Length: 228
View 1: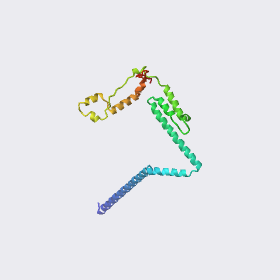
View 2: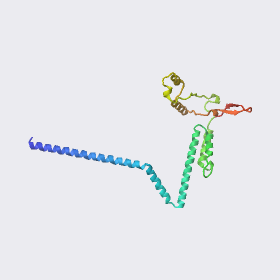
View 3: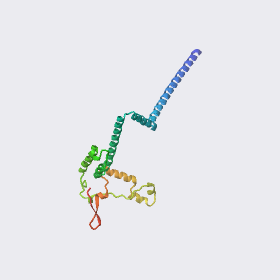
View 4: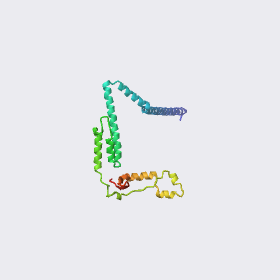
């Protein structure tokens, strides 16, 4: 190969390398631009969720209210009041529903009946009356004692000693550790056991629901079987 051809081949190789480098540089610049663009979008999104942005929305809403006529403003305020009261009644029913989880339907009904709105008591609000009707239907479906039990004296029970709150102190290897492990229950174990029993259909009840305390004519008291 002549010297001239070798030199020409060397120049072509340099040109090829230069072109490849330029293409890589362009790709890097494009990639950097895309990264910066996405980061900028994320910053804008985050700024949209800041307290200042929320305040801006509230300010804009307040500005809109200012533009209302007296009649429109009155209608707007009445709508807001109705929305607020509707939410209050919904929260009230949620509280009552929690009582029914432990079958305290009487307590749930009394809670609903204690509601007082601007238009009157619970009876003027269909949603409150519907909640009471629902509780009464569910209450009527309950059976005395339940299952195969025919008396409160037949109920099985589970006994727990005082719960272990600090495992590091209870199981530190001293002479009490073995006894704690055999007879005691940790807080986490207790919670898991109660949840498992609840999932199997058991429910926690108060002792006075099982045995009622009454006062006799001579002033003494005793416990009698309750109805649950």
